[in-house]
Image 1: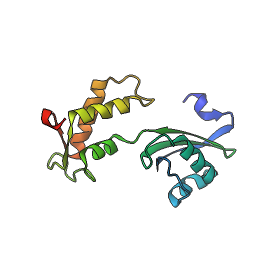
Image 2: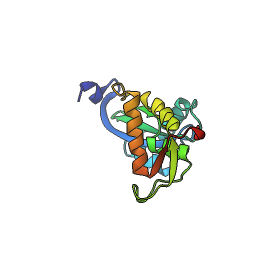
Image 3: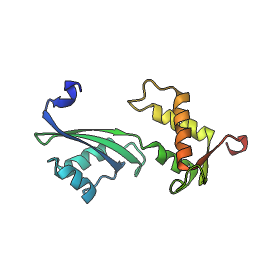
Image 4: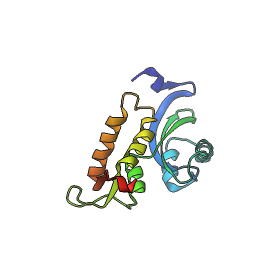
Length: 157
């Protein structure tokens, strides 16, 4: 790994964790406390910083957070969009995916919705080399693993 990941102006890296926290609703809770307490990160400081950073998002949107904790008690964090499965469940209106994907269909998603999800996912930092077409193909594959049918009819637009 590059040295920029190992050293920070606050000191050496202690640990790096990933959390899923609702946008604008971070509060001291056992879930956050267990993750941050062992790293020596102040939970209230994290909650205030996270809520301030995510004030532009729809409240309650489950954002992925990558938190880097340093040995002196400071931290840095980056937020990312929700996972693709969350977008698919929201657009299809289902609670959860199929228990036997490929054998049962629990809902359907229109191609236009897949296109919109792909545009959102391409804006993430780690997607520089992907094209819109390849991202749409990946999302269609994700639909199949969840038991969702891809609908391309014009009447549903």
